[in-house]
Amino acid sequence: MRNMFGAVQKTAVFFNESAKRMNYLEEAISETHEGSERVRLKKHCSTRWVEQADALCIFVQLYDAVVFALERIKKECDGYTDSYATVLSTAICQFGFLVALVSAEFILNYTKPLSVLLQKSGLDFCDAGSEVHIVQETLSAVRREADSKFSTVYNSAVNLGKHAAEPSMPRVCGRQMHRANPNNMPDLTPELYYPTSVFILFLDCMMQELDNRFSTLQQDAATASKLVPSVLLERGRCSEIELASLMHSFTDMPSVHCFSSEYDRWWSKSQLDPTAGVQVCRFTDAMSLADPDLFPNIRTVLHVSATRQSSTVTNEQCFSALK
Image (cartoon, rainbow, N blue to C red; front, top):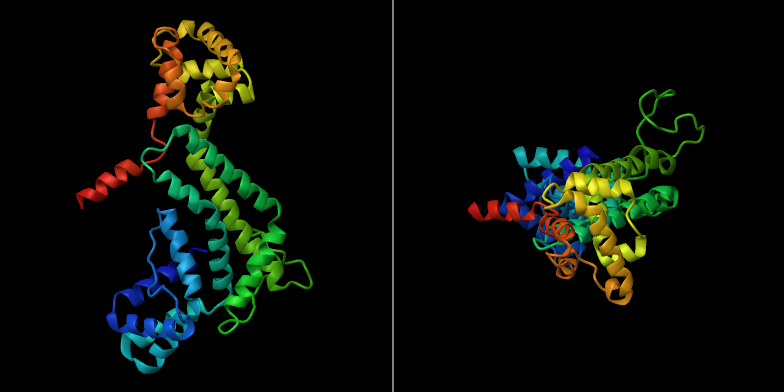
């Protein structure tokens, strides 16, 4: 998978850094993808998931044109251009590359909307946590149906490489101690090899990355969001452990020792008018209901949760403006 991302990046740089090579690509696009609006490949950044998804999507769309352009460059150019085009052509015309490419595009399509959402500077912390949870649950469902999902991916890879690469797989050892390959199967085929070796590994990696990056976000948001009337009415009262966690996490409360009784009054208030409470879904909306004299601690928790950043987009935009 790492080699695939590297090959996509190097291919984009190879064409974008030369007007002559770009002309080869544009001619190939006009011949193989008539009417296509895409005229160039996109480079990606390893820390920006939106760019990775966009770069892979464009590469898949223009794959036939890229292969055709590299073949023409190999025939009509010499020196560095010829040799490097040969290296790139060899790399992207392997069936393992195609499976990794289509698998990564398939999985990143699930996370791209979340990445776009997290780039909004005014995003509510509670909304961010709920959307992350939705993506995690969706990827878990994909993981449970990995065999059927990979069947679609495999067919797409076969169709993508019908003119460039035949379905194949690397040689495997009779015994593997550090990799989960189905080597003991007597009739091992590419369709059985790549799910375990590529698709499921990358899917598990993405799920682990989401857990590592957003576990604290989800924990804090899930606990604090139970003070929002709509969530409170749906999930019920907080437990004593959750109340203790709130008191421990939000040390800015003006009177921590009164938080339990204050929460009981907040619960009773939400029960008196459940129709209006269901419509309050954000921290900022809940703050308007929490009178600072009657509910100082709860208002503090809601205020901190509403102002806490759900992403680093504001800082990144500031740094970008300084360049």
